[in-house]
Image (cartoon, rainbow, N blue to C red):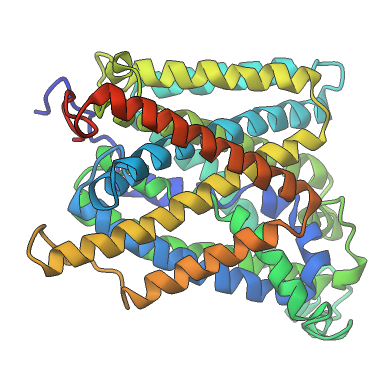
Length: 462
């Protein structure tokens, strides 16, 4: 029986599988894929393959660290132990801020999607209702969060699989196309497979990596996973291949059915595909799917920010009261504090222009890049200590380290540079610099308060 001061391990393997899958498959695929296609054409699939390979390396590094120490603090805990107190502080607060901004954007999206059916409803109202519901779900028990994420993700998976099956029937057998197979020639018949050149593939990388944000949630769930030595490796190994199949498979089908340069960048190609077979409510179906995707992201935001604040508080890097657990052993105080900050999103939803949505999501993605980079750096330091006999190793290991770590870091640095080429993400880049400057100043204050070494007066990380 776990102690009352510990989080309960209530997440099963099926929860972890779908949490990571649902975190990485979102609105970007269902609504934003047409814009990405216009940037790179059919070669967009190369961007996803390369980005997916790097994400796989990051996930293997995270999986190894999570098996060494399966805790709710995850990235910030590993950064703290293997890089330094400053790294733990910056990583923890940056990941918290990343999900806060993402959740603000997603509850705004909920308002937009609900107004598709009920235009008279003020946009802030469904945003507020969504936040309150996800807050209450996360207070019930970690298993409730896992079940909601499981079913939210399953809706997206079923939709993608249905689109791929329908597309293959049209492409291979001409079903719903008067018996004439469409074939795959659209992939190279309109300017070639690389119609915008290598530059298009590179510029698409920033959008691709943004699409993968959320897959690292496996690390946050490690502290509440049942039998982490079994569930974490299984979830990590399977998830990236499923994501690649869904993303690359769906994009290949879409660009085989329709010439890439004829797709409307403002409309979902999924709607076009279902409309092609005469599905009467194609637009309504996709609106429902993206609504669940937004709710899923908000749910993950409440979960992950609560756990990160809980971990930071345990180490004296956030107010002590945020360590409080409810009778169900969920970090209720930290969840409530994060949800309260997310309420700002409801206000912004009422007063802020549309372009701010792009700003906050871009800023959140930069937080993910920092987190991914810190995972790779912490992992290298961990392996050095294992080699020196200072910490215990695990059987589940990242392949090719440290070379693969450096490859991953170089790739993430390239994505950061590419952010400067887009006016919207360039603004977010500058805001990120301000955010990190604030954290550096805040860390100096916290360090002085703690005396000799971070956490000297606190309980230490679990």
